[in-house]
Image 1 (tube, rainbow, N blue to C red):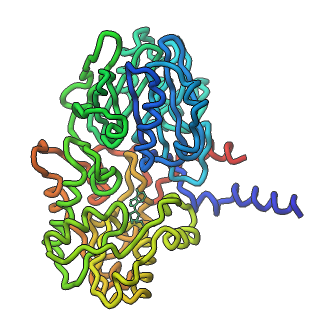
Image 2 (cartoon, rainbow, N blue to C red; image 1 turned 180 degrees about the vertical axis):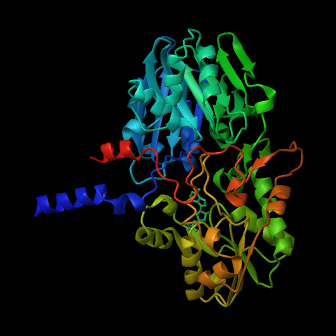
Image 3 (cartoon, rainbow, N blue to C red; image 1 turned 90 degrees about the vertical axis):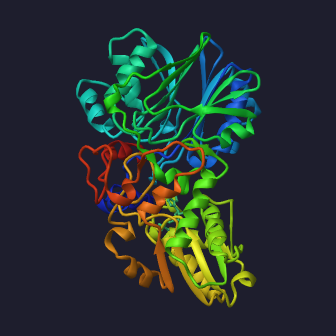
Length: 500
Ligand code: AMP
């Protein structure tokens, strides 16, 4: 009986059905943190990663240095469950980097946990990467055909190979050459026994901020919420196309990419959904931006309603903005359990539907007999909205006016945000009217691209250029071999090995 069951599981995993259902394209929504020049650097890194948990819950790792050797520990799951006092003690030294990984595929394994540590003629070093290298597959194939062996199936590893193979003995030179060969999104931290490097791709897709601890230690993180927990003052963003080196000599900044290649394309979705509202990224407050998104939404799509309810947590601030602008009172009509993972990452429809129920609950007394404006930041497959609307109706909501604080998501992201394939994205094949009918709402309104861009303009922020390919399909960097409808997985053959 047992053997029969095992065979069934095996055959299912290797069947086409499984592969068709599961996206294997390696997407990395991650959080990174690094600190240079402080005792117990790993402890600070642990706290920083803890604050960045929303950016990745699949695995977490820290690499530290005592000036001579690197120490690494990584595990599957969430930060607080992976590290304890004893493990932090092993991670000796005054320099450390860390990484939280969010993989969207069903398959995930320890070998892919970052930071990735390597040894080569450049010495020992480790990399922590947020973003997505879009030519990693081509580069990897090239080196594999010439005998290279890769230890992981994450795109980041190619950077180490390029550094090792470029023929340069100087670490910074090797890093520059490697980064010039890759294309895509990367906010990157690299540690060797004596230095930390922070780099951001020339288009600056993903955020990376720099700060200073009161002791003088220099800190890098994906978002400033990681600074607040470690009492670090924000100094500035690592600029698109910049490499910052921190060593005994202090801070050195390099801009190795020619000016013509630098055309800033900051990810608009970081502000709309992904980053924490208490963070400051891309030289602006996420809170201010989200408030603006809500305000513009209220102007563009007003509603006759009694209350405004935000989908917790990511849409609360936009809902507040909507309420402020429309003068319709903000009400907590939904609560959310914080003890389950994001339903979004569940691979099968059946589980996802269930997840929405487990995740949210309606406060009946707040919504009963009310005309509700429900604000969410996005509709992907439509699963979450559909469930929430059903739940609100069951709780006695009289009318539901769904407002989305972003334009319709029609295209996948190749630069590191987990957005489903075009086939799965409801807005890529349905009109707003059709989605309205499907969700059974009284009205539905999405923010226009024009207003979403306006919302990014907050006080004291520089004029920025944004990547909004997920809404427009205009990709700032073309994806080699893109299968825009299916995002055909290029790394699948390796993952099959792992499932075994
Ligand atoms: P869906 O249920 O597929 O329509 O997904 C929409 C819900 O997922 C919304 O409530 C969003 O806040 C949330 N969401 C949007 N983008 C992401 C993402 N990249 N990762 C996880 N959740 C997301």
